[in-house]
Image 1 (cartoon, rainbow, N blue to C red):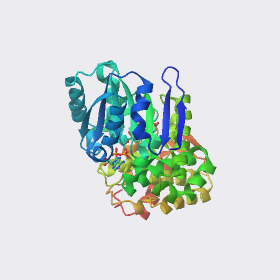
Image 2 (image 1 turned 30 degrees about the vertical axis):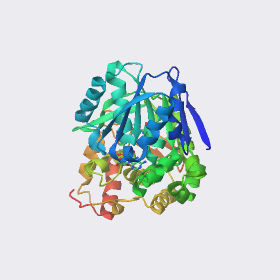
Image 3 (image 1 turned 120 degrees about the horizontal axis):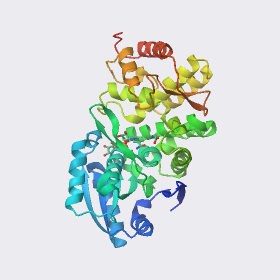
Image 4 (image 1 turned 120 degrees about the vertical axis):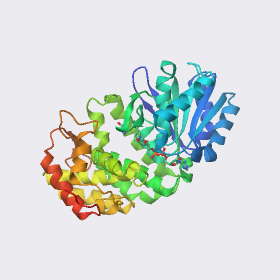
Length: 377
Ligand code: NAD
Ligand code: GLY
């Protein structure tokens, strides 16, 4: 088994990210080496539990670590106050103690929810991320952002709480539906677009290998993405500055997801793909980035089967005004100004805090007209 180990170097809160095929079966040994946990409380969802919970519990048994589990319904709806209340209630009923450890076995939904529960329960317990989607392995399990959704918006109630360990088993992705794999691929390509043009080209040229086999290319894609994220998080843990770069495409993506009603009609990674294309279009329109780069980015996402324009997305029924309104509520927005991550070319992203609304409106008008959404403004 070829395993790579990276370090997220945060003073007092440093942790390892372990990536490789088969690391789930070794979780008990990794957790035992991490801390003398009296007991582990696993949080998972139905889809993941029926495929992978047994491997985890067997490995904990072998390491002599007691465990219990809460298996929740899959889907974004589990990132709610209701499910958080139910989950923390189960943990308290199980007499969870500060020395116990929470393990999040699942995608970003389970990771965000279990991480938040760990952060607030008894004023903070340690937790381990065992991400089982490609998106969670390259993004959500690293960096300590935890949250639930509320009627006012996604991820608006949460905290920064770093995990003590991330175990990314590249082989568990073999059971993940291809649409979810593609959504994670969008986040991998995003890292190249932000800061590493050569990596972006490599990802674009190795799409099939990354998506279809748990081999060396998939591991390299995950390790490189985690390394880039780790360096950004080390420099700016609480997103005072450069961590916002990780949100390339996300101002548009969050608006697309909101218009789709967080329904599964558009997955987060699909919205990020379309959002990155729009961010490069806006950069080209503002004369910041070559038009050819916007065309290359669109082609890369489209070739991977991801949406690269509104025409590739389902009917959203949203207007230019709807998008602008939602973008104003973006967490990055400041002083009423729209904030975007733009680029000076592939691999050269930067945060633009003073983007002229009329330029965004022009872009949206054109993009929506080319797509299938009705134009109400
Ligand atoms: P998800 O957790 O909903 O998982 C997607 C689907 O795949 C679910 O149905 C799940 O049950 C299933 N699944 C997971 N692993 C599987 C496996 N190995 N085999 C078969 N099925 C499997 O979605 P996601 O895309 O992983 O995460 C999305 C969430 O992540 C969103 O809530 C988003 O806000 C959050 N997120 C957080 C961060 C962060 O920094 N904390 C970053 C990006 C996204
Ligand atoms: N997913 C963006 C971040 O962790 O900052």
